[in-house]
Image 1 (cartoon, rainbow, N blue to C red):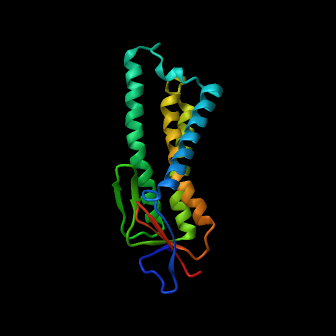
Image 2 (image 1 turned 120 degrees about the vertical axis):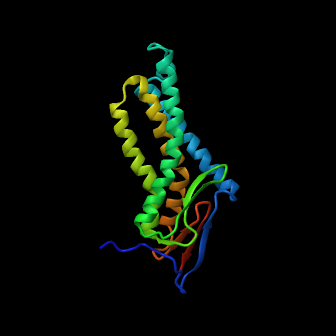
Image 3 (image 1 turned 90 degrees about the horizontal axis):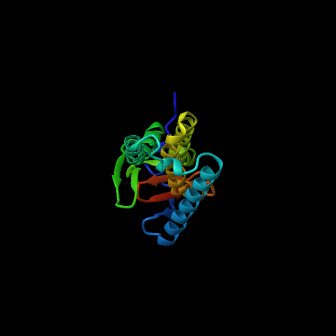
Length: 197
């Protein structure tokens, strides 16, 4: 039987250890978003020069209808991906024992979180990285199947996945360096880390 890695009761031994709030910490948010932009640009250049030129996305050789279809699919895919990214966070939280989830959009970020659950380090690192890993595998498989005209439609989703996970990677790096006994409450818009250390 799977052991829960979340609790709704903060142990008396634990006290606030760190807080991560990318909405209020403008300097860190700027660095994280800058890193995301650099990753996206690097991925775009790599694909353009090594796989399929980006001009394929704008090509009308197969007609105006397929061109519009590709752009419509790209826009719909990006919206769907934002929802699926947060749903993956939520599903992973639930898997590790979350009792009550909440989802929302701040105007800058979509989020999934809980205001009542504390996750241990083992679980929280997986919660943070789950969308990056799951959707990287999915989009890589789709890229292997995509014809050249559709390569950039799928690849833009992959770029959104990898660059959009910059905040999740930042949180992961920070939490990995913290004590093993940490418990993390992630409300979706900020994280408070507790430890007995």
